[in-house]
Amino acid sequence: DAKTTQPPSMDCAEGRAANLPCNHSTISGNEYVYWYRQIHSQGPQYIIHGLKNNETNEMASLIITEDRKSSTLILPHATLRDTAVYYCIVRVRAAGNKLTFGGGTRVLVKP
Amino acid sequence: EADIYQTPRYLVIGTGKKITLECSQTMGHDKMYWYQQDPGMELHLIHYSYGVNSTEKGDLSSESTVSRIRTEHFPLTLESARPSHTSQYLCASSRSTGLFADTQYFGPGTRLTVL
Image (cartoon, rainbow over all chains, first blue to last red; front, side, top):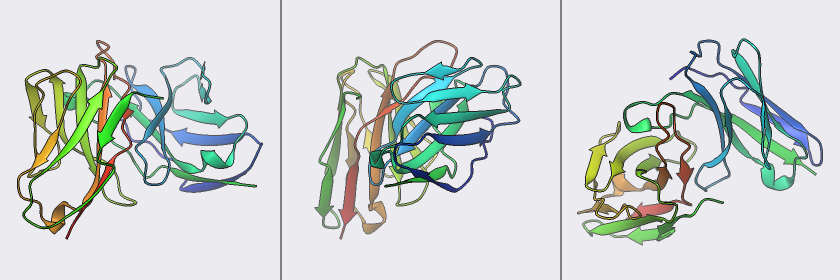
């Protein structure tokens, strides 16, 4: 699976959009971009994934650049409950299909 | 929200005890996984299963064992707990989607403390 690079932390004001960047310059053609988050002491929560088109669901939007070397997760209206560590992962089907989480971005939503 | 459950949520137990951590999912997923995570650290895959009667060891060596007798159930057992087993154990499941990576859904985790 391709390596990803994310900023270690960022703050966001409650009610504003949070834009979380992720670089994955070595991504290959059959690798998807996945986003998970982990709120303190809880299991990781799936947010969204995409291959090359932008995606949107009830939680977030995912914008993938045309060359697929980077992406941005957008939380449109951040709430205090969105405070968590956000992980960007790129992956293909592999033995066991394990998830490998890097350092992630620690997002703190402030009132 | 994903329908995957883990019990107990918290367990404090003495050294040498046998314990079983339960994991069940009601989504009909064929694949299930056990991860171990220490506070602030990354996930480590310790066991996975592709379906009934299929179990494999993950990347991190673990003294635990698993079984998959029913699709929805994937318990993890420690025959003799030790303080080094103190950690959070996370269960996940996914549905095979063919060529590309599946989306894994996680349970709430079991925080185990061995005294």
